[in-house]
View (cartoon, rainbow, N blue to C red):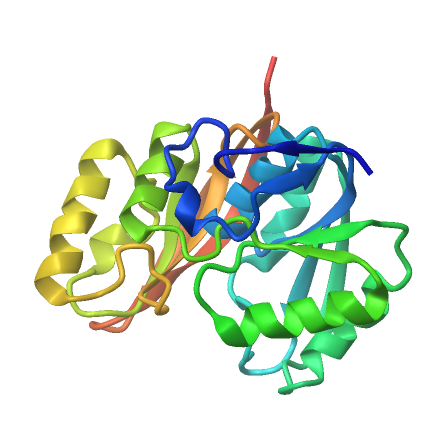
Amino acid sequence: MKFYQSPDPYNSYEYDPQTLEVSAYPLFMRVAILTSGGKDSSASWWWAKCKGWDIDCLVTVTITGDDSWMFQIPGTQLVKYQAELAGLTWIEVESKGIQEEEILDLELELSKLNIDGLVCGALRSDYQKTRIEQMCERLGIKSWTPLWHQDSLQHMRGLVSNGFKVMITGVACEGLDENWIGHILTPKSLKELEILSEKFRFNVDGEGGEYETLVVGGPHIDGEMEVTWKSNWDGTRGDLQITSVKMIKMQ
C-alpha cells in the first residue's frame, strides 16, 4: 500500500504535528464515517475527503434508550439530510445504549460493509476511542481518529474559518443561556464563547457535554440545511426541537 506524509490532518488547518496520532496516510482507503451530524464528526468527514479517500457511507448510531455511554443522542436523525446533500448512503444503527452492548450493535452493521477503515471524530474520550479501536481490530479494518487531542480553541477556530456552519442545538452549563440555542457560530460569537469558557471554566469545544451541535453547511457537503425549530428551555439548560428541514443544493 502506498503512503504519503501529511503534516496536518486538515490540509488547511494549522496544527502542531506533535499532536497528530499518525504521520503517514495511505493514498487510497474506502471508509465509512461514524457521525452524529455534529462538528467533530463533520470535521473528520472533511479530513477523509481531503485525503481523496472513497467515502462509502455515513453511519449513525441512534439511541432508542434514555442514555448512551458512547454516542450523541439529540439530532442524529438529521444526518440523513447531510448524506443526501453529499450524495452518500446513510446507515442508521439503532441501539438501546446499553453499556458494552451499543458498540456490538455498531459492529454488527459495520461487518456487513466492504470498507478498509472507519473515521470518527473522537477528541478526548479514551472510553470511546478504545472501544472503537478494539471493534475495528475485530473487524480487520483501520480506525482513524484525526482530531484526537487537538487543541480545543484551535479546532473551533479552524471550523469557523474553514466555513463549517456549526449550529448550537443544546446547552447544559453555566454561562450559556437560551440565546445560544439555534445560534450558528461566527468569528465574533466564537470569540464570545471563548471569553465565556474562560470565565465559567467550561470546555470551549463542548467536549464535556456543555453544548451539542449540528453542522448545517460546510466544505464537506454540497449545499446547506435550512432548519426551523422551537426552543425548549428550563431556566438552566435547554435544546431545540427541529420542526422542518429544507435542503438547499449548491448550484
